[in-house]
Image (cartoon, rainbow, N blue to C red; front, side):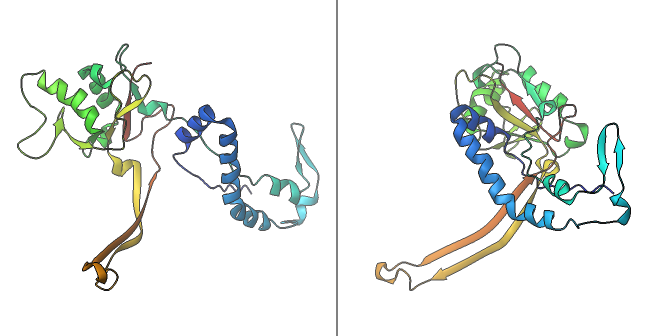
Length: 247
């Protein structure tokens, strides 16, 4: 019987890569912190392995020079570890043409390449995600070059190449040469991940807290978490494709 179990943390690849460049020691500390956080789960999993599951496992069995039996509780427990997966999703990344290393130099063919790489099943709910600065320096520039403002479709918001555009302030906003950087995302986020509410929206009002200032205190709290589970692989594009500038 083979039992596989694991704790998966998604989205740490870029953080680990950055830490390795900035401070290798900090990256090592990051790994130690991850292992410390997962330690209670690992210990609980190890404790569940019995001394001897079946009597037949006391027999000696060697295959291809590897000892499979007798059963070793200590060896099995050592196999329960924390693994930090930094797998690449290269099939979900489209690299811009040579010399297109900035928002200002991206062309229509770069964006069309992203759309062509996006799986057909993700197109009905697809949209563009880009920073405001990036939008004005690339998408709107290309639209205006066609002789008019084709970005606004009848008052229904920004569009580009037939798909809606969402402006994301936290995305890359660097203007000028910025080689090998993810600049734009395109696809269906609902297919790539899930958003869950840890705590529903709660609103509280207090007229006493700031009474000396003749003010009313209003607080609102909501807790949510997003997990992206389908980002593609090195051979298959996921429902969201990224546009990266040329190196």
